[in-house]
Length: 364
Image (cartoon, rainbow, N blue to C red; front, side, top):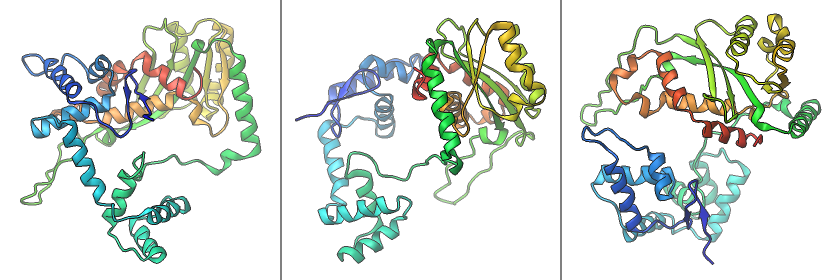
């Protein structure tokens, strides 16, 4: 029985099979027609993917394939290429598969040479590390490559923290309208992290050129930001960016800015962590100030629970886009001020993106 999956735009696909050549060419034609006479795109990859009901990754794949080879592969060529890659690990039988998977369960940080040595000791089969790498990447449903994971502090699982976590979830469940939620936090941005410092080494001489950057490339910025899923909000994200270190005074001043601009409505809920700058010093009046002026409830996050704050995901998007090729593809862009780049990126973060982050954290 064929198993159909649904992608992010409502289209269906069969895992492990490629789309037919007609759809692949339609996507390519749409991408080529979406550029004006000067070569500037008039339609985003997201819009092309939505129009053809495919994933954005598929559109990127077709475009990169065309730019690299000048053509698009048909279904037969794709299958032949995949079969060729599978043949690299075809010498491994079911017994070797079981041993390799067992070794991964035993230690998922094990290096490839350890897999090779243990496989030989267990079965007597001797293969190269490339064969083992291809097995993990191509043999099963998911690519078993090394992935960056989340580091979790041990004290997250103390009884007191678990109890606070459950109480917080219960509070959220008792609040009837998630569209009244706001999430706030701070992020430090170091200038040098935003520069694209990757260049391709010359294969003839081995030379790696230097990259010119402004003299302030070591400067640090402190960002205080707030997001909301409220549909009526003109801009779903507001922030201030400065070079001074974040403290209780700057946090309190930012809350006063939000109150002055009418960011909050009556009986909104502000969710943030219990950091010292949120509760100590001059900030100890914030909860009372919000309630007395706008009837805004402050709900603190449980200890060691950043996964419950969707603004952490938004900060991740911001940091990734700062370093991405899209925002650093021109050499002169390494000379642009960080505040300018941050402003451009924040303007591209849509309300739907905020909602997806909130849904990922369990609020919607």
